[in-house]
Image 1 (tube, rainbow over the protein chains, first blue to last red):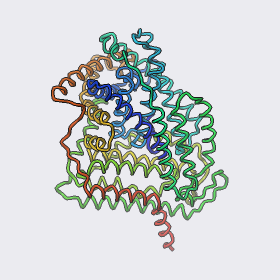
Image 2: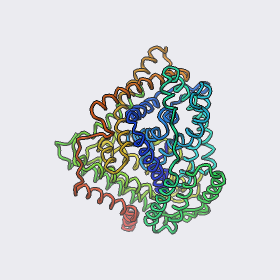
Image 3: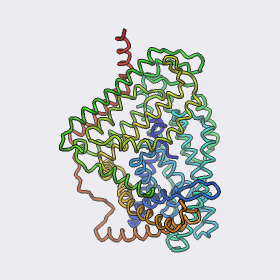
Image 4: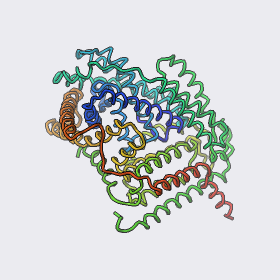
Amino acid sequence: MHMADALISPAVGATMWAASGAVTAYSARRINRQMDDRKIPLMGILGAFVFSAQMINFAIPLTGSSGHLGGGMLLAILLGPHAAFLTIASVLTIQALFFADGGLLALGCNVFNLGFFPCFVAYPLIYRPLAGRRPTPGRLLLGATVASVAGLQLGALAVVIETVSSGISELPFKTFALLMLPIHLAIGIVEGIVTAAVVGYVWKIRPEIVEAAGASRRVGPLPMARLLASLAVAAALTAGVLSWFASSSPDGLEWAMIRASGREELSGPGQGIHARLERLQQRTAFLPDYDFPKPAAEEFAADSEGAAPVVQVGTSVAGLVGAALTLALALAIGLALRAMRPRALAG
Amino acid sequence: MSHIETALLDIRGLDALSVRDSPLRRIDPRAKTLTALAFIVAVVSFGKYEIAGLIPLVVYPIALMAVDGLPPRIVLSKVLLALPFVALIGAFNPVFDRAAMVRIGPLDISGGWISFASILLKSLLTLSAAVILIATTGFSAVCVALDRLRVPRVFVVQLLLLYRYLFVLAEEAARMLRAWSLRSAGRRRLPLGAFGPFAGQLLLRSMDRADRIHAAMLSRGFDGRMRTDRVLRFRAVDAVFVLAWVALFVAARLYNAPRALGEAVMRSLP
C-alpha cells in the first residue's frame, strides 16, 4: 500500500506533498487553537502505540495468513481527525526515514492516501453517523468496519490513480484497480473488526476514554479553497520546472499538466467522481502509445507501435559501456574519498 | 528475538551511527535534508526508459557513504528489504510493454524490461538517500532542521515524541508478546479474538503513561515546544554543499555523460 518514489513522477509527488502539507498545516493550526496540551503527549504515545501494534501479527481465521492493525481509523476514533492525521503522518515519516518504506518524495502520497481518507472522509461521514455518540458493540463494529473499508478503498483508488497518472508503471488503470480494490476490501474488513475489538475492549474497561473522545468533536469545514489553490500552484510550478528540465521533450508541460490535473480532480471527492474517472481513464488510455523520449532514450528511437523496431546496436552498446565506465568512476571516487578519511575518525 | 525487538535494534543502530563525528556530520542538517530531497527529485525526474543517464547520480550516495565511513552494507540491507513492493509493481512493465527497444548482439530487449530496470535503479538511489540522511544526520537533528524549515511545530514535536516513546511502547509490546507466547503452547500468532484485549491492554497502559508523562512535562515547564541544545548555523560550507550537489544533479539531468563517454570509447576502438 505504501507508494514508492521510483513509481511516481515529480509532478504527482510534488502535488501530493502540497496537498498533504496543506492538510498538515491546517490540522496543526486546529490543534494549536484547541489549546489542549494534554493532547500533545497523547498523540506521541498513540503514534508509538500504532507503530508497535502494527508489528503484532495476528492469525486471520480460515485463511492461514496473518494480518496487522493499520491504525488510521483507531486513531481517528480516539484522537479526532486533526490530531489523528498528524499522528499518522508522523508514523509514516518515521517509517520512510528508518525503514525506507516508500521514500521521501512519495511521503506526500502516502500521508494523503493513508491519513486524509480515514480521518477527513471516512471518520466524519461514515463512522460518526453509524456509531453515534454512545455506540453499542454492534454499532461500533458496523461503524468501524464500514468506515475502515471506505477509507482503505479510497486510499487504494488514490494509489492507482497516482501510479497511473505518473506513467512510470505500465499497469493499466483497470487492471491495477481490479488488483488493488478487492485486496483492500479484505484488508478493510479485517481492519474494521480489529479496530472495533480494540475500541470495544477499551470501552468495556474504561468507558470514559471512548466517550470523552467521541463527545464534542466536530470536524470543521476543510479549507477546500486553500487546498485546491495549493494543489494548483504546486502543479503549475512542477509543470514549469519539468518543462525546463525536459526541454528536448516537446510537450513535457502538457504531460505534467494532464498528470497533475488528473490528481487534482480526485481531491474534490463526491463530485461526479465516476464521470471524471472515466475521462481520466480515456486520457491515460493512450499513454502506452505515447513514448516520451527523454534526451537519452531518444536515440533508441523505438517505434512505439511495437512493429519492427529500428535499433541502433552501436548506441545501445555505447550506452552500456558508458554506464559501466561511469559506475566504475563513481566507485573509484568513493574508494578514494574513503582512503582520504583521517584515520582517527575511521570506524 | 522477536520481530519487534529486531526492528527496534534496527532503528537504534541506524540512529546511533549518526553520533560519530565526520566532516559530513558537521554539515548543517538543513543542508543535508534539502540536498537529499533535491537528489530524489532529480532521480525521479528522469524518463522512464533511462538507465545510463542515471549512473552519474550514483556518486551522491557513494561519496556520502565514503566520506562518512558509513558501511554500505547497512544501507543496502535496509534498501533491499524495502525493494520487493516496488519490484512487484514494476514487474508488470515487461508484461505490458513488449515492444523491442534495444538490441545488444543477438538479444532483443523490450521497453518493459528497460523501464523495470530503471525503476529498480531509481528505487535503490532514492531509498538509499533517505537511509543515508538519517544515518549521517540523526533523527533529532533532522527534526530540528524541519522546525527551522517552517514545518508546523506541532508536527515536529509529534515526530520527536513519537520517536522517543517508540522504544518504550514497542518494548512493552514485545514483553507482552513474549508472555503470551510462553503460555500459548507453541502457537506462533495471536488468534484474532485475542488481539482486541491484547492491543487494548497495550493501549490503556499507553494512555496512562501519556497522562503521567504529561504531568511530568507540565511540572518541568512544557509550553508546546521541544528544546534542544543544538545551535544551527548555516555557514558558507553548507551553502557550497547544497549548491555543488544541486549543480551536479542538474548537470547529470541535462547532459548524458555516460552515453557520450561510451560513444567516444566505441569510436576510439578499431
